[in-house]
Image (tube, rainbow, N blue to C red):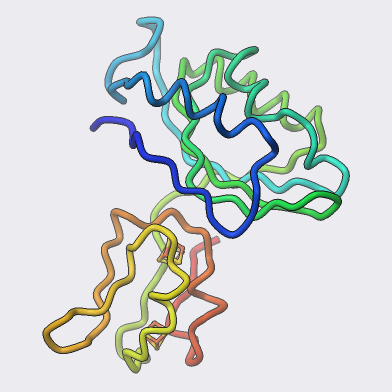
Length: 174
Ligand code: SF4
Ligand code: SF4
């Protein structure tokens, strides 16, 4: 599967290095082919920036120092505030491990994201509130009967739907 080439940054600003980080993904790479021909790994990670760390060129460093391919999926970051960044990371397994160690050294917390949000269809009243906040368009309303449709493959676990749902029908495993 090809690495997603379009970048969607929602709800905030990046740390100023999004363009540089995504420039590398725009060059194009297949997830099944390592850029260096060695053991390849692809992860999805949620980075949590503490206040004061937002200005650090974290994504730029991941690209330049550790030869990683970064695709920023979602960003909620503003100067002098804590922020969250969800990204795809592709590269040699050892480089990813070194990049994650670098994040820890820089005081950036991270979670490896697996799977998708959970939809309790029985509880859902199909109000559509979650579709208005879902940045990946995983949640949509069917134009024929206005029922909610959930494409789990598109979900990247940003958790915005869990806050928007008035009846608690959306949750996440993490
Ligand atoms: S967690 Fe919810 S809002 Fe976020 S991408 Fe997944 S379905 Fe959409
Ligand atoms: S916000 Fe909740 S109740 Fe409304 S459509 Fe989404 S999941 Fe269903």
